[in-house]
Amino acid sequence: MRFILFLLLLSSFQISNAQEIDRSKGDPKISEYYTPEAPVVTPGKTAHEAPSDAFILFDGKNFSNWEGDKNQPIGWTLENGAMVVKGGSGGIKTKRGFGDCQLHIEFRTPAEVKGDGQGRGNSGIFLMGKYELQVLDNYNNKTYVNGQAGSMYKQLPPLVNACRPPGEWQTYDIIFTAPRFYDDGRLKSQARITVIQNGVLVQNNTTIWGSTEYIGSPVYKKHSDREPIFLQDHGNPTAFRNIWIRDL
Image (cartoon, rainbow, N blue to C red; front, side, top):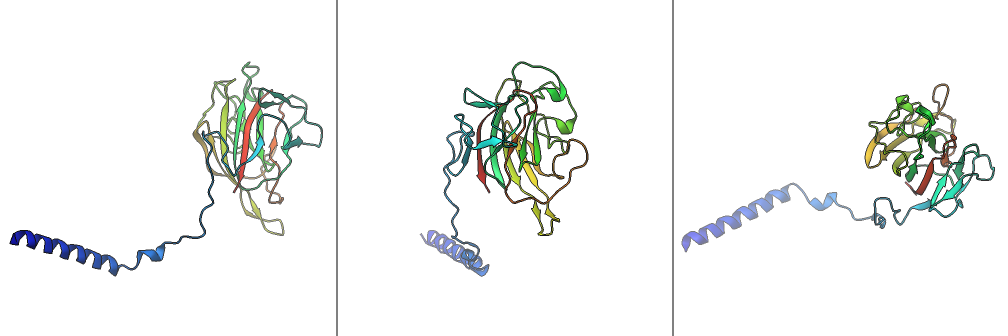
């Protein structure tokens, strides 16, 4: 019995001593804070469904949030909940402008394979209308690596080729940080982008060199903090669906 009492006293002393040691390091509450609280956002029921704070750019029903790139009527078609490029009709852009954002977009290159290289399922997603993430059918289709799907066009190739076969729906989940400029037009900080294609990381917080140029070097020119997103007409009937965006 005495031995049991001794063990209890020893245990009590050790706990008390440990608490004393902890208190000697300071109050843990000093490094805790409770406001402001993070806003509550209800996530989608699936990985592709928009969360509660997203703005729906395209839900398969109409082009209400889009307009022709040069103020011309939209010539693209609506087919089974998707918007499909009609070659020669011109690109389309969002009516609203966006800066820092999280963008979800799904695309499908034509099931019937025609052409090769840049001629297969070509389109592009231009953040702020200036910085192009390439859309292309690169399933068993080679082209210059900084022009394939998942590349920042004519700048940086993707980390891997994560393309699905032609005719299958694919996804881009994009985190974009817009560039910043000083009032006098000088560049303050470059744009950055992270892209997950079909669940696979293809651009990892990549620094964008400047606006996308087909010929010549990328360059930054001062623009507003919020600019439309542009989808390209490159002559191929590439389709898009389920497009939503979150301001960051």
